[in-house]
Image (cartoon, rainbow, N blue to C red; front, side, top):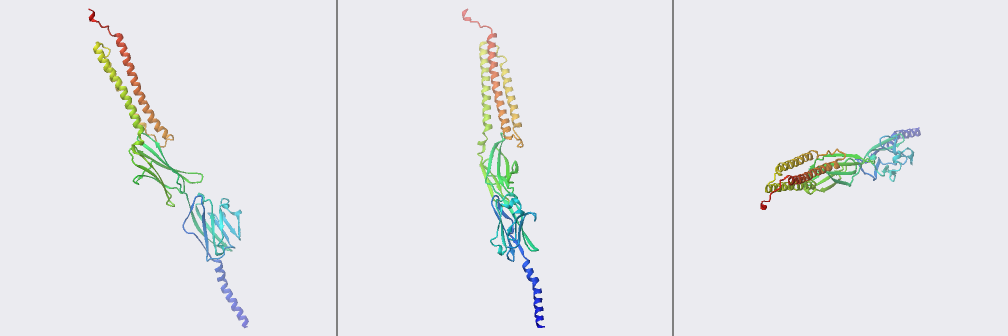
Length: 368
């Protein structure tokens, strides 16, 4: 009878403690790294998980997946790696570090990180019918030091400055600043993505010919806060000599063309008065017509220059058209002045010949 009591007591203790023992062996939590993990583009990243309380995970199923449980990027089960069930793009780029698996800690290492690796990762453990998971977020980042500033002609009043930089992720913040650190509003800003899904940035700025000092192109990675900057020194008006040179050439041609006309006109009148000729009677009127017509043509061409010198930045041939319009109009102005000069010289030359032919012979009174 006493033996039966002892047996019943032991059975009671076993039945009482069995759920507690089973529950303690089955219940666990999965703790992964908190906060987003920054992964450099082209580098590697490690994602660790730890069972709590610590216990061996050697016999468990360990699964890493992104959005779908059925598409694991790494699968470890019963001491084996099941490559056949893993997502192909991760088969050769992942490795499971199992040095501390007896304490319930495993680490997934991803090699050659690319933009598609950005996002959430589920760390999943299964022991029998019990399972638990935790989520880690990975932020891929890429910062480029390859930034170029191009100075492109736009028109006679403005200079177009363009900043180009490629190889960024995520999309960087981009702005122009002057030598005082003041932000300059850009004329346009655009971006594109290459085959690696990295961002290529482009930003333009129009500067007047009186802008002193330098300008700086700033790019900032919003994830890491890393900044890259490239500046260019603008020596004020020295970079805007094209229009000045054209104006000097134009004024020179004007002086060259008008001075001979006036000189020939005055000489012809003096000579005509001395010789009593009437051939220079209408010379003054002709000179006025030639000079006025030349000035009118140059004013019209100058007006066209001021109207059509602006070429929209959206024009695919922006740089070529802007310079072409300016140069062509200036060339036309010079040609018009040159032609005016030639016509005037020809006129006075012909007029002089006609005067000699039509003028009456002079009498030499000394013979009488």
